[in-house]
Image (cartoon, rainbow, N blue to C red):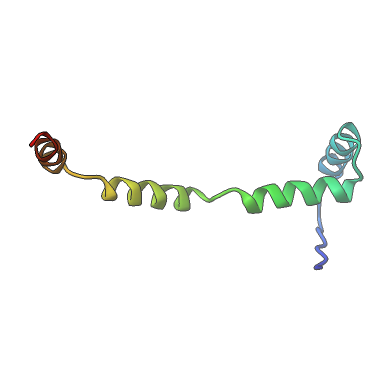
Length: 74
């Protein structure tokens, strides 16, 4: 397991994180770890756009859909 140190964090940010951790009944370390894990699990905008493009390009054209409908009628 890796260790991460964060330097030059402002006192205001540190105080807010401590408050939020306490509200969630977590230590500051556990709260920060949860935030980082959630961030790492969230797909990037680029990943989402790539997935959308893949889905759109995988769709059938209108003529293909109509041909499939027509072939199903016979």
